[in-house]
Amino acid sequence: MNTRTYIKMMERYDIKLITHPGDKMPINIEAVAKEAAEHGVILEINPRHNHLNAEEIKIAMKYPVSFAINSDAHSIAALGDMRDTPAVVKAAGIPITRIVNITD
Image (cartoon, rainbow, N blue to C red; front, side, top):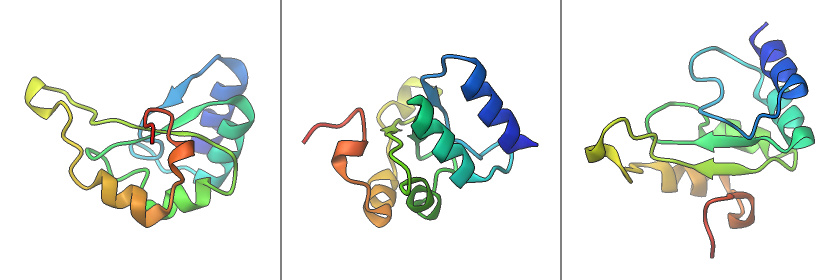
């Protein structure tokens, strides 16, 4: 049901980005990533949540979906706090060209 909700949301609305997909409710990341790629929806990676983790990112990368990296700060002190996000990106093997808010 959660996965269907994400998919219907992307089909029905002009969604730009999904924040920490799968964190608040379990989803089939492969189905969500496929739909996100088809609709140009970006998937967010941030250090405050356990999703998207490296394994989920590898699954999502089967499809031409883009990613955004965000500190998900809820306070000024947390701005820019990326913790282990660079390590997750490296472990997942995301090409820099698939991260919309990083330039090489």
